[in-house]
Length: 273
Image (spheres, rainbow, N blue to C red):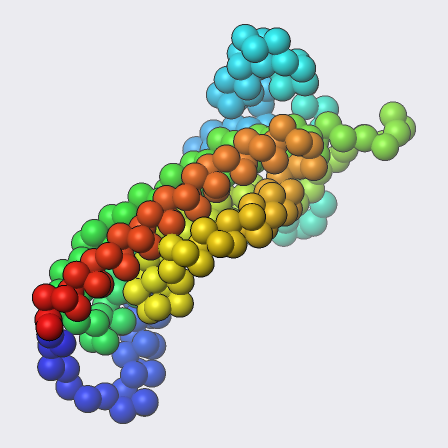
């Protein structure tokens, strides 16, 4: 049953949305302020971690390649590039935008809560009780995606792009904003991609997606996933395969989620007859 809600005009909805957006912005700014004060940790440890050859991912990839007798190109001995700032306000600007990005990531569960609060008046009573599960699952998937982007996509991209040369006469002097932009795009994109099961859940609830549809277009989805992997990773086959595997797993999980939603909806229909 749908809980009676007070009718709201279009302007009332806009006003309600405005306050949700204000609270979301304040949450991001507060978390961003905390990140701003932790400058040394954010930059020296987090951002420039993949810049060091002893980064955890490089060690794992090297051990893996040695154990299975693969190409030792994954054993990173040197990352021959420097990071520099070419603009007067470059470092300050990088500090500000990095703090905002960190604020968005840290405040993500609260942002989901505000989104849920905005859409909840249009939901049924039995759907509103899943608010906590929605926030926990969505936040978990997002943070797993962020970690995947940081520990997998970013090191692979830095290793390939940072060492790629067209001539020995050209040295890679990487601009600070370019380096941070690569890391930011990898992390945020991965976090959002890992929300696929949640997106499929809601699309199935709306009747826009079915398990049969997902199975029928699995081949096309595979092409899209490989293309997406090629966009967000270096153009070498090994990196694309590493990135594609978790996305394919998420797609298969999404099929089962869609199947579960359809089965539950049919069960509800039978019980209401």
